[in-house]
Image 1 (cartoon, one colour):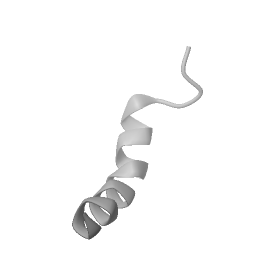
Image 2 (cartoon, rainbow, N blue to C red):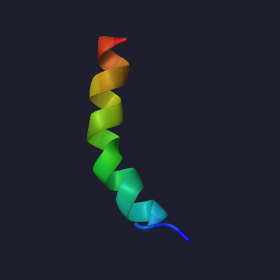
Image 3 (cartoon, rainbow, N blue to C red):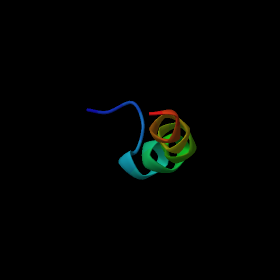
Image 4 (cartoon, rainbow, N blue to C red):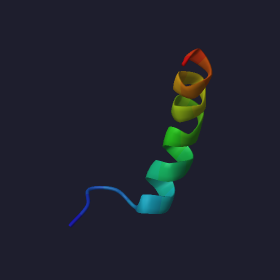
Length: 24
């Protein structure tokens, strides 16, 4: 029931999470 694959979202969100984590 997800609009996107978990693997795809994980790879696509990896850079975003890293950036946000670094700023924290």
